[in-house]
Length: 367
Image: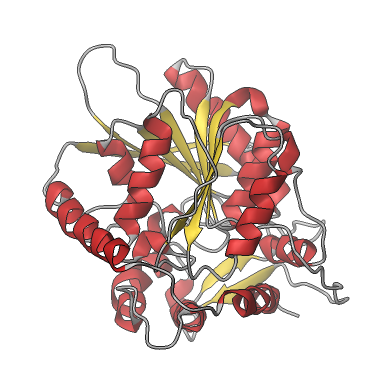
């Protein structure tokens, strides 16, 4: 049974809990539009951002990790807060945190706010090395393996920048990676953002015995079909099929050199995340939220079929090890608010969380 099936199973179970009437007030909708217009105008012509891709050793020196780096050059000795993205399972940096819409990406926005921004491609994805064909031990790319890679990346960055800690933004499956990182290497972390996070199951479902292949093959149309299943009837988020096929799709396919040699063109994706998602659905969460002891932000869209309102509250309540936490729900956003009309609201909430030196955080839900 394919990893894609497990993902969809988890997705469908979540979507049954979020098919509810829209609670967004008209003022919230207007604010999202205003942020979109003003944000696009403010940043579209910025040419100060510098970028580079660094390749470092993984635990296996023959396999290299790709770290994407963006920052705005500045004079003097001012120290910038470091942010490291833990990306989702099937999409590397180029198709997510570094993907530009209207000339601006999520990484760009943080860099322009003065952050030193990094993002990791896990082994088997993007610009990082592919696993050898002889690899054994089950499907590659499990959250625990990716968390070890994230720790390697964090140690490299901290040594290079001569600082002690950094902030991690874990997006989707990356929230599991970030959660493991936060609980296993707390000495490296100063803040944590769990964006569109995977949350503990409310009603665990038994795992079905199956032989999971090491890899899935995902097409651009697969992503559109999943995405379109999230939307309430008659609603539009600023993203349509043309966006996936014409704008985002080519960048996604570029992440796998063999993608266009397949029919239909598809990206080979490690299946380890699907195993993790199946375990979460069965009630075995991959990290203990109570062990997180740094300021933490949970943020997701109103129509997110994975990080539902109930699931986000459940995860928030389990964060008993930190006194500073916040929960933000973005109206009219799905599991991919970084691509949607509400993306500037996502950016602002996260940058504000990161900029406040001593945040007085409370449980807040935005509709």
